[in-house]
Length: 587
Image 1: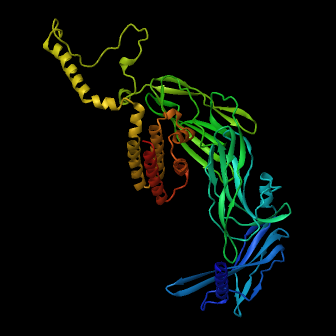
Image 2: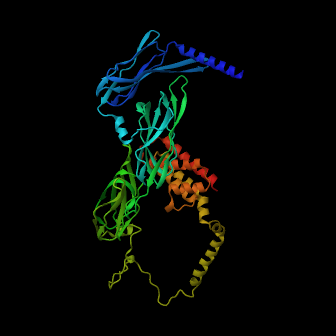
Image 3: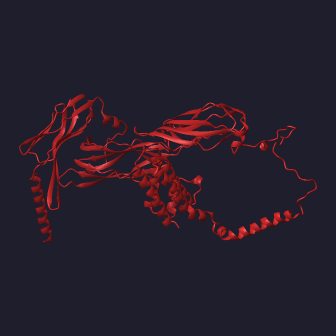
């Protein structure tokens, strides 16, 4: 009996909804929209839609004589009803859709389409389509062949990689496509999986637009929903996990459906034996080496710029290894990345700037810069070498020799067999001959006072030394304190809208916290090592993924175009939450 009641109620609901569909709201603003691409290839198949926001009694299509109609017109409709404060409002939408293919190249005006609603004619906008002589679909298929589809659902996602057998560090271009036999009203954003063993960058992807493809004798509407670049970070067999997307079907009840891709295996080969000048670059590169000047005075800075340009894992390799001669003082170089990933690969340049300070006059030969990279196409290492440079260093003034705290004093210079020592020009204090410190009151006091001070300090610091005997425990205990201190500096940059400085401080705080909390030396700190230690410390997978995702976000944001302050604010709050969450799990 209950089943009959439910069936009866459902029937009433359907009849009531059909009644609403037949009703027309007085004073409704009727609009007709003709929607389709403005440029297609001569071999492309594309979808054309004519939509009206009222129930029509007659439909007049646009001028399609220059196009072959593969399917259509296919009619679909939808409606929504709202009751607010006892007042009911209704909206409806009717669509006629076509799948078309151009007959020839050229520019064609389809004119307008029209619907008749309650005896009144409503006309759409006009649409002009330019048909080029090349097909965007055929160009894509040459790099991503799709001869057979083994998925059996009527709607599914497919991850297409341009190659699945690569070397470690070689980039892979990926495309996520949706295949459907149904008309889709809406696609939600793609749900991104967590990649293990890959460095990932998303490529800017235009809005999805369905095109018709015939595969294995079946017609599918297909669209690219996401493009990305992967760079494997370790050798072995890796897996690209499934992507997911929620799509809304174009029908009476606007049914939602979750489409999912299958995992894809990637075989990653290890790199051959690496030359000494290899710092991790994989791809194809060129180098440009420049000194801002080659004639300077002692203690004056010289800037060395090493620019590496090309296509490959630009963001992931380190600076060239340069052995500067004695007499040249230097520090770690600053690094600037400029990349472009719109063409399906990562290309651009990476600039290393070294600050060199000559500490002694004379002619100094600066060695050539060697940069080695692995070419995955040629399957071998290639080494680029610049020419050596002679730096002429003139003696500096007395002020310049004492201005720099790290420069040598004259007393520090080596005695090179000369028979005359350097003459001391400073004031010299003399004492009377025969006066001795030994045995005097000052002599005994000089021993007793330091001894008493040492005993006092020893007593006061006894507990502190005991607590800090375990270095790892100390770093663990102070990890949160140092991280929060670093984040305070990031908050100052946030208030000043200094994006690059802000994300640099957040990165330092996160990496510093992980190093201290997990007792990982800085030299061994990496994503894989941090992930392994977090798992070993029984931190849950969700928290680990949040840490890794925030590291990616901060790294990308440092070099990406300026973002909104609210994005920086949310990343700041996320960093505090992550540190607090891990602190609660690891005591």
